[in-house]
Length: 57
Image (cartoon, rainbow, N blue to C red; front, top):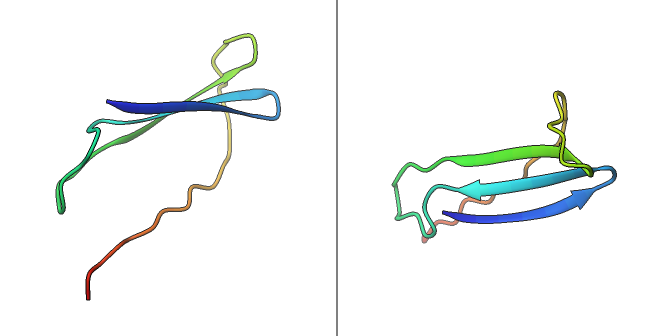
């Protein structure tokens, strides 16, 4: 599993991808876990997630 964490305001965001390097056309899951700075789960959190599709044309 490939993961990272960072802080936005008063929240800590953890993001993880099931596969360290997903293969082309292979399904994978992106997981988010949001906590407060004192590590308590946040019940509601809104954020945008940009993603990029790379194709060889």
